[in-house]
Length: 120
Image (cartoon, rainbow, N blue to C red; front, side):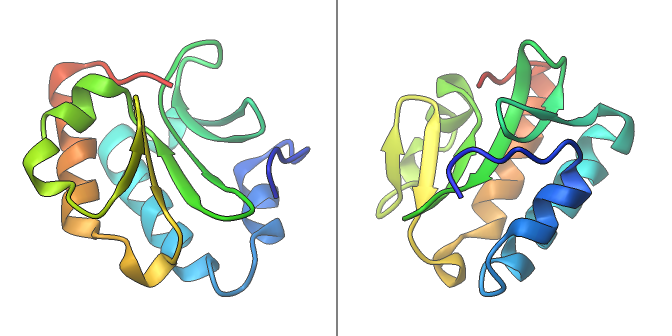
């Protein structure tokens, strides 16, 4: 799945490959805990949090990766802990769900929440 046609995050999650579903369920729960369910929506074919036109965080299940779109500032805030994480600008990517560092991801989400900004 590169860009989903799902209209809701629930529908998106139903499309996710079974081996990725537990990691994405956990990621989604972390987002809802920090940003609130009312901030969750589909934007650009992926689950996103914030304004539909300019979400501050999003994630996707791509062909080769699980990708997080957090913004450069949020990823720079934890740069010293990102060794081994594929990164491009404001995006962090993991090839295998079991390699995702959820403590690191929690800190990225907390940075976004505290600063009031991220960026997709």
